[in-house]
Amino acid sequence: MAIRKTVFKTRAEWLAYRNQNFVIGGSNIGVILGLSNHKTPLQLWLEWKNRDAQPIKESMYRGRFMEDGIARWFQQQTGLKVVGRSKEIAVFHNDEYPDYIQVAPDREIFKEGTNLAGRPFLEIKDTAMYVDFDVQETIPSEWFLQCQFEAEIGGRPGTYLAVNDGSKSLKSRLILPDRDYVRKCIEMACAWYERHIIGGEQPEPINGDDVQLLHPESTAGIIKVGHEVSQMHEQAMIYKRNANEAAKKYEEIKAKMSALFDERDTLAYEGRALATYRTIHQRRFDLAKFSEDHPDLAKEYTTISAYRKFDIKK
Image (cartoon, rainbow, N blue to C red; front, top):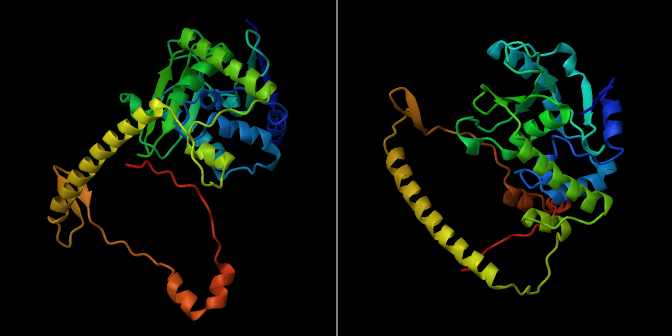
């Protein structure tokens, strides 16, 4: 197994390289396999098709600036040493896989203190979500895949995942590769690449956001479906009734708890805040009054937007 490493001097050089050809990397393999909660395979495909018109998002700048601080925080918390030069933009290829497969991990870690046979990678996340490595539901599946994928392609014994989460705490965990699992994922991602990137076939929509991208305006008409969709509808109605019942009970408890307040704003049990009832001051624009006082201006500056609203009928 031969690993090739390419180092880019500037981010502009790296972006120019990345935009030349579609690559399967750590940041998008989870999207390709439908594991992402933020982007679908179709959205990824459309972004690639329209890449010249895609603006750089503010979140990308935030991620770049936060990386170094989180890496130093990880060092201080774990006692492990992050390789200083690893903050350079480096891309790794593995000759066992097609050239369009590559990884660009955030950092490398010296192996001393890790009990590993070689240097692991470090993948850094900055998120508003709450993360608990002991509660699997709080960790996006695409993060676990990304860490295993990077270790596999980079020929590393594992990848540390360091997360600055919504509680403003640093959570970290060593993710060891499951080679059977990650190789199966790579096989499926390669099949997707062959079909949709080389073949040019548009991926199928998998949710309403995808449909709205393809068909932003609805027209009157009926799509005939089969018994399977009818069963999905029945299940949805059951979930909706249960959700309505849960919402009703939640509101009942909320009413009882809110009645316990006076001018003080927090309910606490043994030092732990259970609920707050705080005054919020807001400024709101009175469009109705503005339209009455300045009808011409209101008409000039009022725009109409359209979107499709999904509703399951009873």
